[in-house]
Every structure is written in structure tokens, then in C-alpha cells.
Length: 250
Image 1 (cartoon, rainbow, N blue to C red):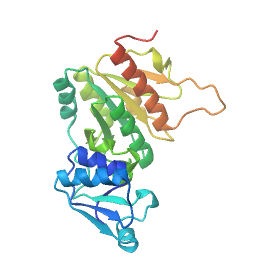
Image 2 (cartoon, rainbow, N blue to C red; image 1 turned 180 degrees about the horizontal axis):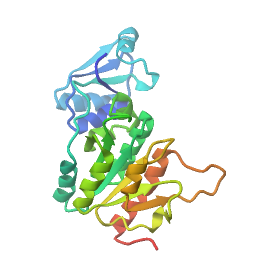
Image 3 (cartoon, one colour; image 1 turned 30 degrees about the vertical axis):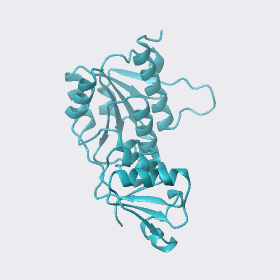
């Protein structure tokens, strides 16, 4: 089965981002304003749009949530180096803002975290090469196409990557259930990397030991923790709020 991006919005975002697309396949009968926008955008970029009957379409994508639209792409996500992410912040004249994901395994969580990262102005996302979800068509769809705009580095060792960022002036904030500091009491206006851990195990010990701050999200209900993507989004939005307001919560 070829590599695909599935869903109307993810495909449109891939076109806007200039992602290399071999062709776009529409299920016969799909129509509407979004489909016309997609056709127009594809025509501008020289991407062929073809139609397929239900049986042909199912051979490409069995997921019912494709909304009758898939894009066939020649390769998976092109990853960058950590230095490239730092360079993005430098070019924008901004303090570095990085999201580090320590063994996030659920593609839906990975996609949701990348989407929140893109919305909050994160310059790049770091994921491990092993024991974690990688950027697949399911992740692209879960991110609503945000993966096509977000620089992402796939690294061998998260702990070593944190040390590298520290040498470049970054402070590292790890999100843990037993953190000593509420997440709103940290200054995120400096170069900062936010670390979100595995859905069940959290941040691994060696990664945790390298974090400058361990923060927690206060819980007021019966459950002890939030979904990883929700928790990560809360911290990223607090960082974005501070960075754009130029003030620190006290």
C-alpha cells in the first residue's frame, strides 16, 4: 500500500505546505466547497486529481474517516536535525521553543501534540527513533495536517538531545504527575524545551534527571492525570501566553 495522507483538511494543508504529492484520489461522488478548494489548489501546484470507485478507493484506504479524499505521497515525513530547529527560531528572531516527546506511542496523541505545537508557535518537535510512534498517514490526519508545517527531528537518544539543547542555552521543563512546581509558575520566555512523556509510564528516569524543572498540572477530580496530548497542550499554551504577553505568571 502506498504512503498516503488521508482526509480533506490534511490534504489541503499538505498542498499549502508544498508537500510533494504524486496525486490526489477522490471517491466518486464527493463534492462541496472544500472539494472545490482542494481541486483549485491542486491545479495551481500541478498535482493530478483522479477519481476512484468505492472498491478502488478501499484498496488505498480502508479508514472510513478519510472523507473520500487521499493524497499519495512518495515518502514519509522528512526529518531535520536539532540544529535546524534552533536555526528556525534564530531566523525568526525568537527565543527557541521546542517540544520533546519521550516515547509517545499512540498516533492520535502524536498527531494531536504536533497540532497543538504548530498552533502555539513551537519551532520544532523532537521524537525518538525507537519505541515511539513515527509520522505516518494516521498521524498526519490526527494532526489536521500540522505535520506538514512542523519541523521534526527523529533522534536516537532523548537524554543526549536534552544535553545538547542545554549547551545551546535551553531550559528543559518536564511534565510529570508528581512535579514540585505548578506548570504556570515557570518562566517560558527564555529558550525552552517542554518534555511530555509516554502515555502510561511518563518521562523515563534518565530523561527526567536531565530536566531543569519538573512541573505538574493540578488535578481537582477523581482521576490522577490527563491524556498526554491534553496535558502537553496546556503547558504549550501557557508558554505561548507568556511569550506573547512578555510576562510571567506569579
